[in-house]
Length: 250
Image 1 (cartoon, rainbow, N blue to C red):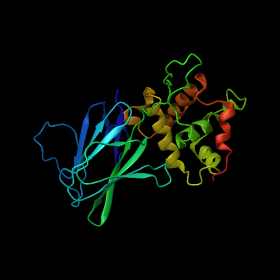
Image 2: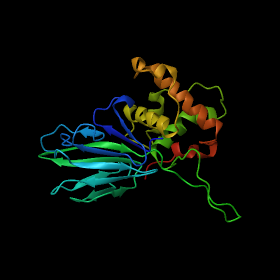
Image 3: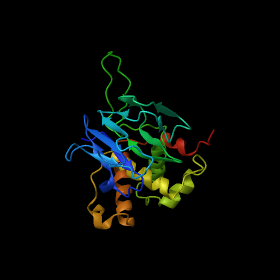
């Protein structure tokens, strides 16, 4: 089971993403200086990027970054962290990255280039019981402070409000519902979070999600239906948690 997904800029779907299992390493840079067959390589086609710029190593629930540059500091940003980031200095080996969503940013001449890294296997624990035993890992690890949970709550809201057969909200309706708590939300960010939830919750691709049907309304509708069905079946979103779509931003 993969633990890290690397999403190059311009990626349009799973077939252009790179999946790493625990222990696997991905090197990135302008060109691969290694012999053919030396392992996966992400090409960053920019003259300001070193031929061999760095590498990512996946673990079970996080990943590490090695900076192969002798001069440049790389920055790993948390897109949901209100400016939260970490620096990885020149020559640093295996710096652990704690974010579930990350963007690696490299200085390249007068530009900044980069790519995204997802770590969807971030796990969370239930509280230990009164017997003092070890806490239990949640089967569907969701962080209720993340924007993907806002999207999931908005999708589930009509049926949790007492309409079990209500049609699912459209992407546009989800955008309007979340505007008060997430002013920057738009159609693209909602679709991105739906796709990420499908990865996070390990949904099997529906039949209509074959390559020939990529990016079609049917594909997205099937994914939304599968997400809501799973969430309601296992109480991943409860009615009392719908206040997350009511709270105003701080």
